[in-house]
Amino acid sequence: MKWNEFGAWGAQVAAWAQDYHATVGERPVRARTRPGEVLNALPETPPEKPEPLEQVFEDFERIVMPGITHWQHPRFFAYFAANAAPASVLAEFLAAALAPQCMLWQTSPAATEMETRMMDWLRQALALPEPFAGVIQDSASSATLAAVLTMREKALNWTGNTRGLAQNPQVRVYSSAEVHTSVDRAIWIAGIGQDNLVRIPITGAWRGMDPQALEAAIRADLAAGLTPAGVILCVGGTGTGATDPIADCLAVAAKYGLYTHVDAAWAGSAMICPEYRHMWQGVERADSIVFNPHKWLGVQFDCSAHFLREPDDLVKTLAIQPEYLKTHGADGMINYSEWSVPLGRRFRALKLWFVLRAYGLENLRRRLHNHITWSHLLHDRIAATPGFEIVTPPMWSLFTFRFAPPGVADADALNLALINAINDDGRIYLTQTRVDGAMVIRFQAGQFDTTERDVMMAYDVITELAAQLA
Image (tube, rainbow, N blue to C red):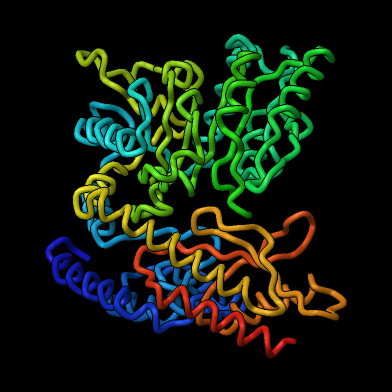
């Protein structure tokens, strides 16, 4: 393929994408291929000679599309939506065409300076105070890893990277069991070790960390000669939307000089709406905050907003400057590769710029309000239906429920059968989780183009298939 052919193919792909998004609701949400089916449809050896792009595109339709779970489906109610608003797709197209490597200011000044401005736009949208500065990470997992590395280095007086962990005291990090498993991975990768991730009990309807239990754990570790390093809090945990009492927990952490990271990967988007900010009251005292515009604001994956009260701590942890990475004659300019674990960086800020300008905060707030309102309506209908019970109440647009009609001997098995029947049916897509050991079904509305009718269809599908199982 040559560039003089690109325009025609680009137009064809754009038309295909437009038609796909217009008709995706007619497809089953989850892929229906069997394990190995796509792999076996692909030749075992690479082609020696070029093949016509017409054939490649035909094979894309024949081999790839049947194996795609449609995350842009309006009835995708599983996990958290990974949205792709049209404006974001266009920006991704441009970024792919430019293909810049944005690791340093000099390697693409526009990318660096736009990232600085876009992160400040988001800071203002969330009403975070001015000391916070931001960087775009690929995902919340990377932001959490960066935060864990920073809390480790601060606790070890900046000697972990130089002397190694074997020559330093044992450090401890505190979280509830409701945090995302990316926290566990960060603990592993940082060399802290799973045994040093201290799980604090939860309390209350929000299933949040108990601040008194947090302080007791810190005091016990100090008495044992261990080194408390940091606290990781969650706002809108993946399983049930669990949310820690941010202000109270941050006050405990500050009392003992611990670095704090708030994982609001999904629910942080809701904080563009002033009426939800009480749910992370006190967050301005955190050292590090992350949320994902690619989850609920329509920005295409990957785009994770990481805010820092003192960016110098992160830079001191991660920065390394061989001569070939220095930008002479541009003192004071940010090199965002020093703010993240990977050196290479994509032009992610372009997607934010397109989406924020194409929709505006007002329209984005309206979408979030709709998702939350419709989810609450669905919750109320399920709660009023005999045989169903609400397990955890709505946290924004997420709640969990359970099918437990009278006389059922094994409710866990019944709910697993129900979730499998729902997803095999294809009209909607849900996922399961466990709450206090019990198998429950999880619902979350957040796909960019979902409608009230789509959300209400979930009720019809759930109750219809539950009746068949009962």
